[in-house]
Length: 356
Image (tube, rainbow, N blue to C red; front, side, top):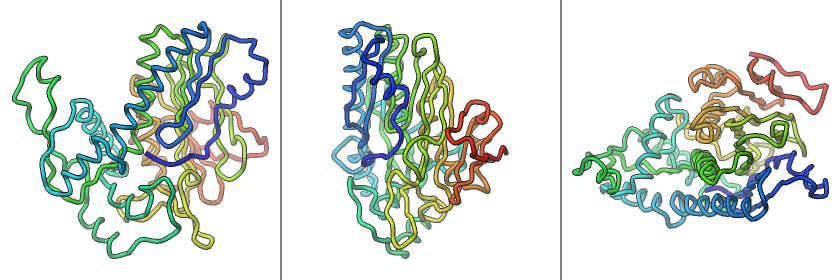
């Protein structure tokens, strides 16, 4: 999906690692989705924890191979068909993901828009490494004018019914050749939800899964909740700490993850579908999510707030049903909801945060 993401690893895990391994804590790391992935299991024997973590990481690799936007994958094959104006048969799983992403896009009034993969590519972010260069303004304007959106995708009725329908591929067509799918703002969250499902089926009651800063908590760490850190967007280390409870996820979108500099201007990978340009004036957005799809929401729902900016993030948070959210604007000022204020402990006691 994306290249290496510079975001704070789970601080609690790093501190525990220095405790001499006295606690029943098993940690396994890998590099998937273009970022560091960390699975930590508490309270299980090492063989059991290793097996559970291994299954999670194997699933992550499967999803990476299925959803990669520019390397050979089921998603890239679908994009190739869309570019030719052709229909395409896809797996039931991918169909469900695209339908869910479409609903989230509609809820965000188009600010979350996985159909703008063409713009992401135009800006050079469809690469593990990218050059500091601006795209052609005419090409940007043409893609914006084409208005690629998730609702352009049509899911054709299956000729089968009942159980057979769920086992068959789904036919998809698209009336807008400008639609190119990029699920980089969705896939990590979906992977978190899959990890939670796998761990629960394995009987694991306490675990923490971190995919490049999108973190999901299962149970707790012994007698206390899991404690995680939120990366400061401009300094090494944590801006704030937070106790993550069972079934909660936290996600951060930042302009420090994938970006390039031209002069003093920072161009990040988060693109406003309305203008076709990278978002300016926001350093980071962090949200806290709950429920059965907490992982997906931790990934996808932060994007509308980031794109809406300091002037519109609060309305976007309400649209996405996010009572706990925080935005760091381009000047480093912190804006947050009352719900998020109750959950955070800022590492710098001199930080002034404005509750909105």
